[in-house]
Image (tube, rainbow, N blue to C red; front, side, top):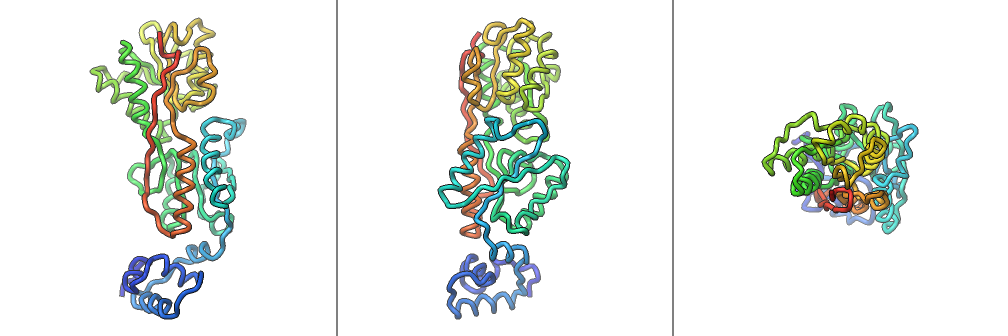
Length: 342
């Protein structure tokens, strides 16, 4: 007798698929009596008991996928390039599959609890945007993961945890951007990063340092590294600290386009013009990057495709009751425009 037996063990002993075991215990669809008897007998021998939440989830479908986004006062997340592209990709895939998108806001001060959305039958699966490396977040994700409920993280990876995620190769994007600046003769490169509680920030920092090291430059110049919060305002404010460095460090890499554009505006007010007095590269390839003067060099992140893929993975998880891959990363591309050409 194995008190730790799972559905896979039952399926193996009964000689059926895991999906068949799930259908037997949730009384879904026509099932041959002989097959049902085999499954129940195997479960009895193994002392297998399906989890109550999993049963509840399987019996009550909502035909909605919850998309969880952070609620930040005074910030219109949905109007930003980052969130609008992700949501468009998710929505496109869900629409093709006959599922609805339920947008769920979560306050930064609210205790994280993703399982409650399944228990209330609000959603059949969830996609989590804007998560960050914090104790409460990790605990909530561990609970979600242990219950084997359909979910995916987008653009956030937790090192050492087996959480399901779709991400981009941010270290490579940063490496490409900084290497481009080095190839133009820049040896002192300023980096305006985002908060390190986001994995894409730590990965961009890694790529920045690796590019410098690869090109034989000092990777630990902490006086050249600054931190914003991915908002245009934080880029604008960083101009006060960065402007005094420009005569000796004439290149800046910003971890997203919004900060890059804010920095460009702040430095312009101090008499420094991007593409003339210093080289500037952003990140994300937002629509605004093409509209600035000069146009902004940047790194294209396939946000729409990341959203699509996350939705596809969750739907596959729901329909097949099995997950093929836990983590996947999509490639990024450096795009050179006028702002980095002195």
